[in-house]
Length: 509
Image 1 (tube, helix red, strand yellow):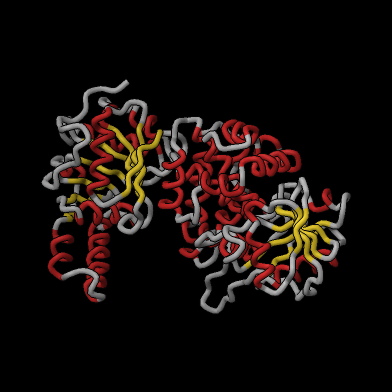
Image 2 (cartoon, rainbow, N blue to C red):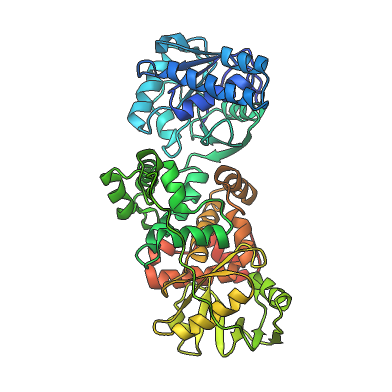
């Protein structure tokens, strides 16, 4: 499958005397150029847009000056770093480069045309690398005369700050090329992971549900502020999905989703959102356009999550069965002056003054309500430390919701009461993330690599496999089966590895 690679020791990083060419001087390209220069390489920066490389250099110099002013960098080091980056006016000036990293528009034809031109410019042993975030590196390499020297080196934005780099192994790559790319990224101070050239690689593929499930909840209905608050204040995520999409740009996020959707032959779980596309069509791209899911005008008020009215303080609390991930609620109740009792039960729940509080399992509260008055509560990263709990009662059961709200408010939590919809917010999102990650395990990506990629590449509070182990594979399977039953089997079909682990009663992964 692989041909001869560059004439260097397999696994050795490129010497800092080897020039690095970066093609594309946008935010990402400028960031990559800065990373390579900081590691000591002479860097050649090119952009087909007139003056773009020069403007990028000015931006790098200005940012370095700010770091000097804050005493985070010496003036000598800043001058040395910026002095190693040179803007070039023609692609032919990239000829001395031993490594070329392209960071141009996410278009396969454009990238193929660029690499075809570069093949006639650089030496035969130069590595041609793409920073694509979702396109097939195998498809890009396959168009080259020497496809064995093409590899993916996927940085995350901002490149100087984000630690993770995905080294994407196309089917055609020489092993020496892959290992050199890996060692070079490590030498540049990055945490490199070698991943297969599957659509979206690891991070952009596994992360799709973080956005998709948020977009789907808008029809529940749940407001954007409610969803963002649930995932940050209960789920422990650094930013909510709507704020992240506005930060990335709705056009960019939608394009990555479309790319993954197309590459997976239109599997429904990756289907693009009509809601997001409507924002793109309106020019509401997020922060960069002044409006997205949120309004960023100077005089605009940022909406807040809706908090439940104060509910009654519980008079009787009985914890039935083992609460699993929600077990900290017992000790928390004790700490806040309640006197919870314990009782055996096959299905765990908390009886608060005759209302059963159950951890969300993907079913509707209305379904559970046929057996006894029930309120579902959402997943939290840490029930002891989280500041918000999301709950849902069956339609017309506002008194039950008030009892549940009063219980969680007594424990010091803010409470969001949402309509009764499958999976609520955090559980539905985490179940979908964990399911996608479990699917990648069957493709040979390790659990540690997936969790590391998602915590470093997206700043998730916990990797999706670790989330699954914390919740329990059996409970996750139940959540996904209920989501499949209520919302569509194709979208929430449990991955085989997840189902096997759940049925075995312990993790096989």
